[in-house]
Length: 115
Image 1 (cartoon, rainbow, N blue to C red):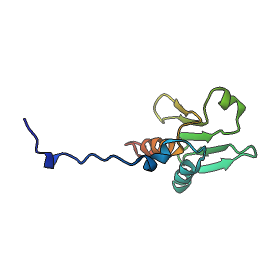
Image 2 (image 1 turned 180 degrees about the vertical axis):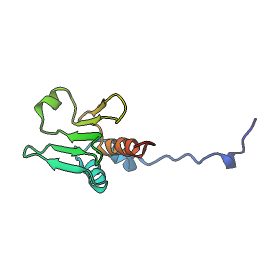
Image 3 (image 1 turned 180 degrees about the horizontal axis):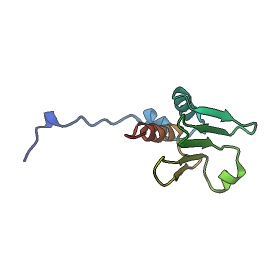
């Protein structure tokens, strides 16, 4: 079977300067902006760590740039999910994970059916 090239999607090749978000700037802005816009309870600590809880209480996110225990484990983002009828699970991201990638993960998690 052959497919007309007119029916295939165009290949998009972003220029290297368009990929600057692929390297972390250690800024929590994209994640915190997303959670704040969704009405999550967001609390920052005097140490500059941030904790957020979803309105239903089933998802907890923390940004831990100043937590020595997190740095020993090589993480800066901690996501904990407690399903209403399921096993809790955790996803963590290291200090070089772009916050845009963490925001994308959370947006997909929140948009999942049943959430």
